[in-house]
Image (tube, rainbow, N blue to C red; front, top):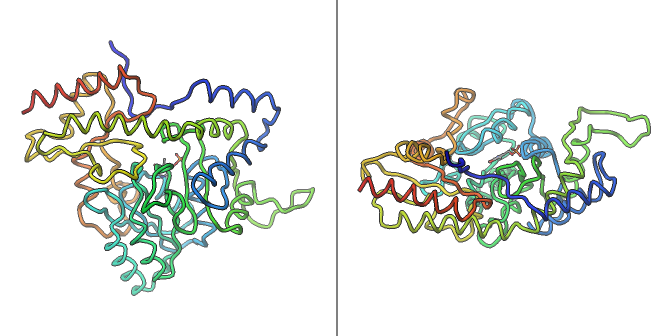
Length: 378
Ligand SMILES: *Cc1c(COP(=O)(O)O)cnc(C)c1O
């Protein structure tokens, strides 16, 4: 049996090993240290923001971002239905109610016109909308040019979920630099990894220091550990920050490799009626974290699920796009403003192996399997 080809495995090697061993030998094990400070500086510089707080996960960054923006139990937080569950979970942690907004047809990101309608209706109903959380889906930044002025008009702060989008940009500005604050993830499958980790980015010094304080058990400056409010143990460790610093030196190279994989798929489906690269017509600013195809079965005569079955038989992993939050049992009761796009993308999209750690041989094997399937179904 051939090795299974995975969608997005960690891409680590000698550089990562060297940074990690150096941090270990420096003695900064427990748990903060100079690599955390340097990692924060380097990511902040890369994204062009003033402050960064390294945290245990992207979910922790979203949670503390929401708390710091003033989200309280009973508030409403408007987010994209087309996302990973962590976005909605973080909203629920605060006691607020998630409200899901559907997608633009092509890129799958939050539809700004629907957001405007949602804010209009929520405001009219007397709800307190405490934040808007757009999500940069699969490495394509949301349309902040339209979203930010809408949120501002309603006086609602924006927390950007840029967990999938480090290295991407929108209208020339880096993903992670939009809104009052944003969240990055360094989970094992993301564009770069700290094995597990995340970061809160902001230009606001008060937000940054409050996130640091809440993430280290909300300790008042007293030798006996004085506490006046509930805190969290959400900080990133120094060893993992060292891994992140190594990955950051390779970020552009890794993005380049993911883009090259996308180009292989693009060439294969270019002449196939009814198959398109998801969000691909306009992807110059994407980080190409994951590449998906969208299949119109009326034109192809086969479905995304048929392709998934064929790839699986060749021991190649592929997956539907995120199942929208409004279709998840856990969020079935949450209010939502829908146009059908997220559900359609979920039903017709398939994400293909996209990782920067894929070998030339694995890329060729995946391309051959895709090509064979397309050839057998003309
Ligand atoms: C991965 C991801 C998260 C959560 O990040 P973790 O580091 O896994 O907690 C949040 N939002 C989106 C959109 C993600 O893809």
